[in-house]
Image (cartoon, rainbow, N blue to C red; front, side):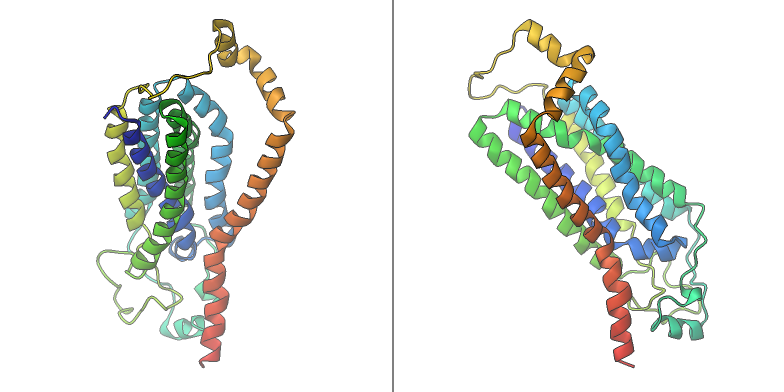
Length: 316
């Protein structure tokens, strides 16, 4: 298990499981969560935003702590924290009573044409809504450091040409995870949310019904178990592997102390903030994230509410 490629493979699996939920399954399940827990669009947006806000606040302190620790063990701890966050989201489902749509058959017929009909869209937030926010916050705390210290460990443990390949595979796994999350949503959301089957009086409901609530929690449960299973793998890895090259970069004892001293943190921040290249890259990444996050988060909901409504009206 001393090979750095073992760390790369485990890190890619973590990224795949993690992204399958945060950027795949949860955005695809927004409308389902709104119906199941009587949430507004603001509430569902807050669920997604909580992850980003907590990660923004925690990424620097958590990464600083993890960087000074045994990195594989720190990643293992992060896996446990992320798995706990996923577990909280799944626990919300098991705390919920069996779901029964609060509409009559006549109202259901109107809902198929007009999603804005009041009985179709209740706005009394469930008491379980805060647990969804807590789960997202825990996930953000666990994931905050992984995407910083993971690549750093790869760069320090592998020859440059191999490290670049490993980094490319790692970032590609995030995209693959997002795609798998949307595929999971398409599969699991076609099954009724409760394992006991459809409630009495609603046996004719189908996934095309506007009051249908799919099994949103199954994909999160899979990610929870998968990430938890990765923790022992990281625990078996050493702090440092022996790279097949000699590093040409050396630091004096004074420089090393300066780089890790909190008293000199402002000098490091000032050096970064006065770097024009850093600002350009940061603005480019932030602009991309602003567009992509909004589209991924609410694009699926927009298509469901507007496109399907127009389709139903044209077929009447």
